Length: 302
Image (cartoon, rainbow, N blue to C red):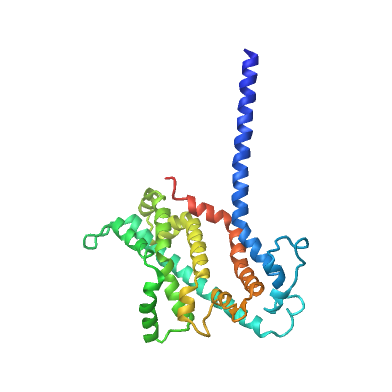
């Protein structure tokens, strides 16, 4: 009997360690797959043409790191404190990306949160549409490919004299990410018991008072998650930024795509630009990871 128990115990232990090994092995492989493009981009920014062509991967083993890519942007140690037209251009584009992305994301979270709160707490009837139909209508706006909206927006902003302006991009980016924010925040507010607000109303608070003192603190992680998602989408948007801007309002993605010419693609400069462009998003993701997880899971369990 003891021998059988010992055999079953050892078999269970072996299965446990095998399953753990399989799970962690799969997660490790998936992590490598996800992070390799970032690794490739960062290492390519320290290569020269011959290193890119031969596909060298490991620095100091397959190739000797070089500051050529960063020097072409005026961001290498030997050019960082010297005057540089290219660096000034990059900083201008970087500032345009920051202004448009942050402003559009904040506006989308503000407007989307109010719309989502209304959809989760009140019943609406617009013709044959009810709350679920209205929510789906917002989400359906993402089905349209951007190229379909290119000409209408181009004509509209031309008539409004807003071409090549950050205001046009902020308005457009807000509309672009608003459906996603509404859907995320609708689930967040739906996961907050309405009895908490009813109790606050009984205690004498107004609807807005109950919202800001009861609902807002509970939904804040979801708002942060929605803001970060909107920020990433706005930051990486290229099509409309290339279509509606020419000189003053160009963003970083447009500048990255411009690293091509008659001589081919300037891979090292493009990689350096891409590395500089993704660094803020990586930093935001690291420091706000716990808010992202809370925001994505808050509405899953009621």
